[in-house]
Image 1 (spheres, helix red, strand yellow):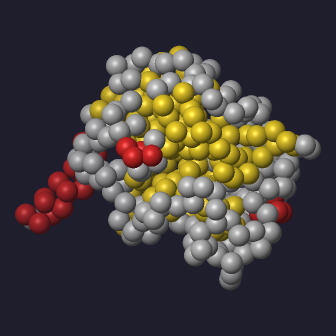
Image 2: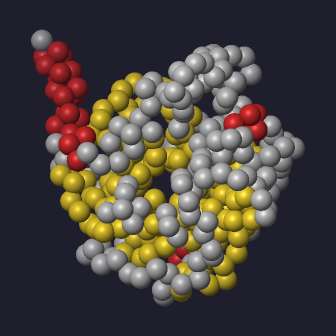
Length: 356
């Protein structure tokens, strides 16, 4: 009996933390897309129309930073992710992804600059998705630093070019891996496009590094169903559009095989129907009893923050939080104070700090 009671108490302990208070930290943002923390606790926030701002913990949002290159903002594309270099204290680097216009279309690009006061200096575009595509959809994208200082970048298939996700000679529907200067790391998979790390992705809008293993984890949008959690492996094919649980819009007809299929990696988790995942973070702090090690994913369509319980590479539980807010969750990050921060989508977007 005592063991049974202890087991029940252990099982119930994480549930006690699900009563959260979403404390507004920043308000009045125009379609915010990503959040990153500077070492001093200030925040970098991207707004999809093409503005990068610094905000202070007391809620003051600064003017757009000078020096940002032109952003081709339309549809799902614009100014997207932002990350701070792990060695920011010594090099001052920040990196971001954005839609860059070019002859015949646009491309998801990665830029780097040093942050000096309220300016970006020494701005360089270090990577451009190829080929350019005339599309306002499926731009991706998230940046994750590996332990070795290289960058993984999740890229979309641009919607009209879904079959190209299976072609290792281009960047559409891929994870690419580059170094801080945009060069190709020597230990990348030897594929036709040397930047490609993994292929067969649809539209990656969430990514994080596993705190224990150092592996890259991603979430990507399926079409009508078929959102996936993946661990992209070097040289691996993650299926899209050959293997997918998703179905065509309107008709609901099959796109590929449900899988599993030899030669293609199985997703760790699939959502049917879609939740429209965006933003991802592992919790490493002790702020929320029983939740350390959980994976958190923002959901746009489902208007929730999804807590995923994992055991190694196995998904063993799911809980949907913040559903009462009825807001699309665009990004989620753990702050330097250990609290979780979420970014809500829309023309009056907010950054919320989650506290029990």
